[in-house]
Image 1 (tube, rainbow, N blue to C red):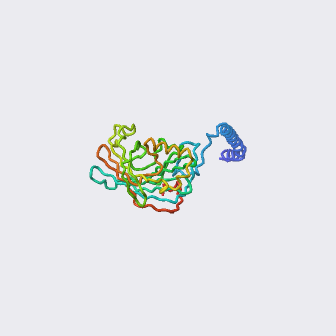
Image 2: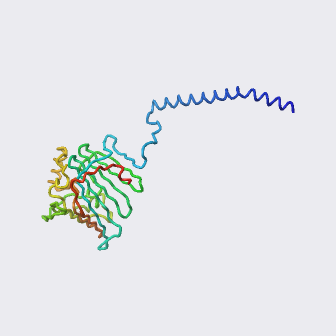
Image 3: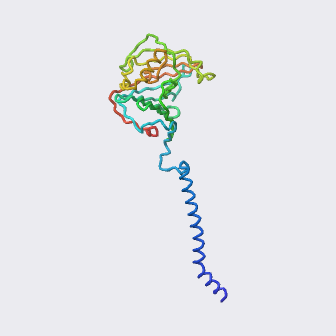
Length: 283
């Protein structure tokens, strides 16, 4: 019993030295690891851990050289709806709700579209001053998108019927006023061979499109575009194609399988100043 008590006392008095040696070893290893980590981070800054403070609910990728704003201000709003048909039968909860915003002080516009069937939101931002375009898609409070350089050739804003496919539009000569805006009708038949829809049951056969005769009537900032865009738009019009800058006020699409999509304007509001945030897509 006395031997056990004596051994316990020896261990007790020796413990601080043992702990000090162990602590020295641990701290020495930590120091070596820290110095090694700092050396790696200095050599490869991209390997540093990213901050977790960023909002993961909206992720924007794409071309890093393209600059986009976090918010835009518009003062013209075009409210539209689209309806989908299978043959002559209207699709319940089909189609989309659409708002198109234009600016009178900047050459910029925005399209906000929400699918009634899925609730998915699609936002498109076109900024001619920064020559940038941004496409966002979101559902359930989470969204992502890509920013790229704005180029009229191949530019395809989110819109019912994928209007980027429209080309070689021909005037029919018909004119009518839609929500106070004078429009003329165009028709396209040449979209069946588009490589993006070949071998699908949605190869377009006919598109009837009503476009404002004066783009300034809905997009006052149209005249503020850089000159090279204006010249390109005029050339595209002469060649018979449609630059997707001013959206149609009415459109009727007939697909090869008998499906139809009808998009129409319900209201145009002038001087409706609104600040649109990119994060609005998650509201």
